[in-house]
Image (cartoon, rainbow, N blue to C red):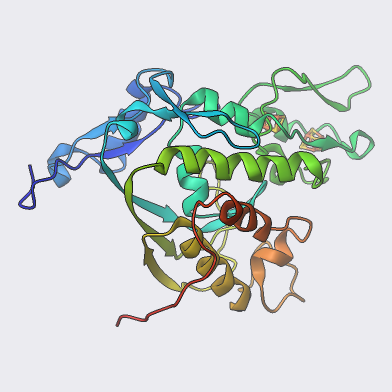
Length: 299
Ligand code: SF4
Ligand code: SF4
C-alpha cells in the first residue's frame, strides 16, 4: 500500500501473436528482464488477462461493431489506471498512442483478434523475390512460398497484425486502406470505450524516440522526429489529438525511414495512405473523449 492508499502494479496483457509476451509466465520473465520487478520498484507485475489471455470480463458497450468488449479482468476490477504510452508510427493505424495502448493492450486475446480480424494485407505476389524474410517475421506462421516460389498466405492463420508489411524489401504487402481498415479503427475506439467505461484514468504520452513502427515488432529504426516531450491528460482522445498535431508540425529527421526529400510531418509522409485522424474522429463520435484541447506547458 502506498502513502496515498493505493496498491499499484505494473501490467500488460498477453499478445495475440506468438513470442515472449504470449503467456503470463514468459511475459513476467520478459518484464523482469526489462527491470519491472519487485526488487527495482517494490511494485509487482500482474498480467491482466491471466495465464493465456482468456481471463476477461465482458463489458456492455452496444456500439456499431461491438455489443460487448472483453476487458482484461485485472483492469476491470481496478478502479483507476495510469496509462503510459509511447507515441510512434504504426503500420495499421498510422500512429500509436493512448487509444491504441488501451483498446488493444487492455483487452483479452479475443478482443485483440476481433479488432485485427477486419483487415488482412493485400499481396502483390509478382514482386516477391522469395527472400523469406517475412516468413520468419510472421508471428502466426501464416506465410509460405508456393510452388511458383512466390509468397502466399494461409488466410485462416493471418490475424492482420501487419508485421509483414514493413519487413518486405519488395513492398509486397499493403493494408487495404478502405472499409476494412477504417472498420479496424472504429473497433479499436470501441474497445477502448469498453475498457475505460466507468473508470478513472490518467494518460501519459511520451513523444520521444518516435520510431516508424509499433513497439511490438522485433526491430527498431532511427527516429523520424526529434523528441517533443511528455503529454498528460484525463482524456484519451484529446491527448492523442494533441500528440498527432504536434507530430504534424515536427521536422523530419534524417537518416531515417523517410525519403530525404521529406522535411516535415514525418508520420503522415511515412504512410500517406493512412488517415490517422479517422480514429480520433470516430472516438469523439462515440463519446470516448473530445478532440478539443488546450496545451499548457510546464517547465
Ligand atoms: S519478404 Fe517480400 S520478397 Fe521476401 S519472401 Fe516475403 S514477400 Fe517475398
Ligand atoms: S498480417 Fe502478415 S505478419 Fe501478421 S499474421 Fe498476417 S501474414 Fe502474418
